[in-house]
Image (cartoon, rainbow, N blue to C red; front, side, top):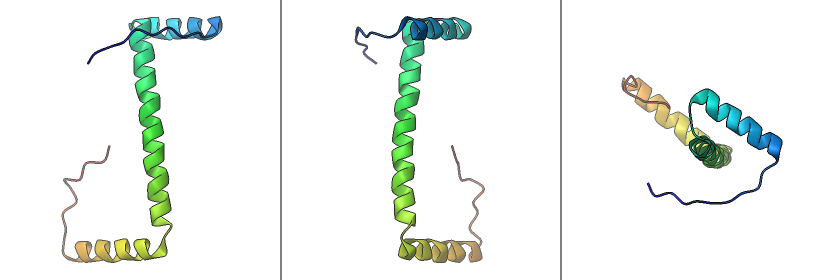
Length: 86
């Protein structure tokens, strides 16, 4: 993946903590900050997905449909052992 150089201004105490955390992990400052930014962006995306799912399942008709489908699949002996939840 291509990278771009940027210049940002952060308080010195924050930079000291970033440098210490990166050192403890054996990472460069850049790789540490990149990893943290990726994690924050993923968390934001995941929170948005959760919010949308919560809105969807707040609708009684959707909940009733999902409960009916689940009962039907369970009564048919659906094997859920290969489901991967991450």
